Image 1 (cartoon, helix red, strand yellow):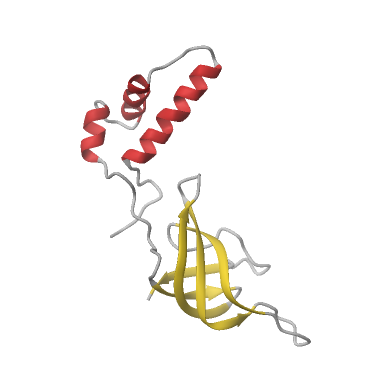
Image 2 (spheres, one colour; image 1 turned 45 degrees about the vertical axis):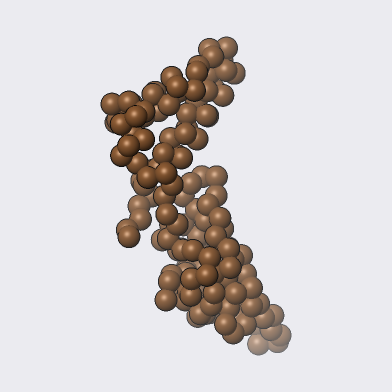
Length: 146
């Protein structure tokens, strides 16, 4: 299955409709849930809400799932491990993932001491790449299914 940052779901449109209703309520222009769903569906190019609902999946599948065997790099160190947690973040474009490494990874580059981690939580995009960067410009984490 391929993933795109532009992938939407019925759940995405429902969330947008809720936000639209809240915004209109703050402006003193109440909007019904049905009218909000219709407006959001049309804004995405659908004729109406029923058409959008029929064409879209309930939710967009996550590229990684709990229980998947994964591989990648964390702070420049290669790893293999088990995906313990995957949570879609509010922006609908990033995931918080928790990985249990098969072998602990040294997260310190100093020759004077070491600090090993076997379980880490990080934010990655839909491609498994962390938006947070190291000093050398590389992502803190890259993760993919084995």
